[in-house]
Image (cartoon, rainbow, N blue to C red; front, side):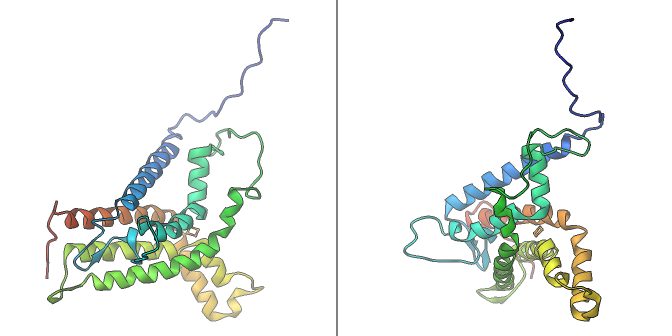
Length: 242
Ligand code: FES
């Protein structure tokens, strides 16, 4: 007997910077979460002229609701993103180290999949998708409105910012895995139905870059709100291009 305790298993043999991606994921998601909460609590400066912040769309005015109207809206996009297949991979790795990266040991001793609370709620993703399609339709309506000022049709920087945002959000929404399954799933031979097969192939192409749309649309939502907020509070002036 030497009295030495057995050597602890190594976390990984990887020598590259595998921890950078989970670290960036944590920092970005926490920053976005704090910003979204701050924006929701403000309940002001979310619209200017024809522009409306995506955090407050659709615009709901409920006299019975004592809190910021953003809370009536935000549960849908936040629930959609929290249950998204891509974000699940990202935050399971980054927050729970489950595992944090390929060929790196995970921290949890047991694995229950997504069969227990709260992770069983991730199975609601397809229902959030139905809701978010409606929200996206409202965002397109807001974007069209952003081109109509008091003196008629026009193009401001804010109009273009809102247009880029809704395009990125649409890429994210319609590249969803659940939508892909809706188009091509539950059939023995999807190619037998030309419409569904064509739709499935189109969504599959978009789906290849789903993670990219997820991040870009998240940044664009925050930046669009920030732009409208700065204009509405008088910090900057919206430039009218046309
Ligand atoms: S899988 Fe990401 S939005 Fe549906």
